[in-house]
Image (cartoon, rainbow, N blue to C red; front, side, top):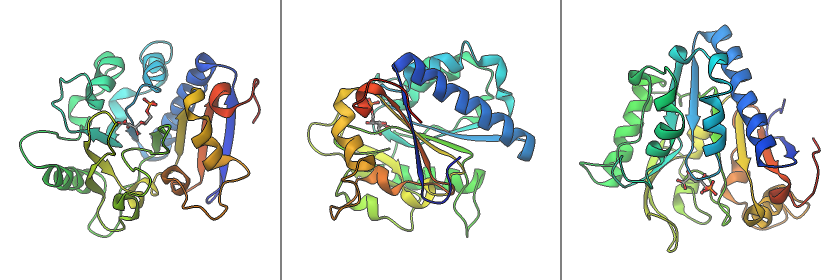
Length: 254
Ligand code: 6PG
């Protein structure tokens, strides 16, 4: 287990192996959290990478989690309707939530309609406060699953965006850089992500190799502005689960 701001890296031979390692991490944390606190507060992310792992949780590992004790939140959302195929909640619903007995009242999608993105972000922050937080402290997720884009963004915290420096609000609206699918987005911020008990990055594919090297490689922390994922450490450090292609190696190490 990681401590403080340490990073622990696991490289899996392939994506199938990676998905099993990640799913087992969720199962283990769910068991520990439910035993310790009676519930499991799970933060999920969008993108393509976690699809296979979500499908595994909903199939092979489904009986290993007490789904009626799981509360689900989201790291970020694209401002498109919930039935749009680019909507992160839609992807998580299709791959996982519609297939497991989570209670609907325990699933907290980021709203995308009926108000401006900053208002929608404030609403989600109010939801987090009501469900998990208090006026004084940020909510504590038991497990925060995150990904990383090839450009080095995580959640919808893009390199150089002022949202990366947000220190007060828990959720903010951002404009993704040109070329990113859906530019209007809502994202959780570092003060919240860094309250997670366990942070796990799930990263696969050759297109992530350069960004991985910039966060985890020998050249990391050398002068350059750190990429947003390098600033996410939760309460106990961050775990990085990579496939060999993202890591630029050909076998597992730990
Ligand atoms: C999003 C995600 C985002 C994602 C990375 C990686 O809405 O885009 O939440 O942060 O995790 O972009 O995405 P891929 O897994 O598709 O590479």
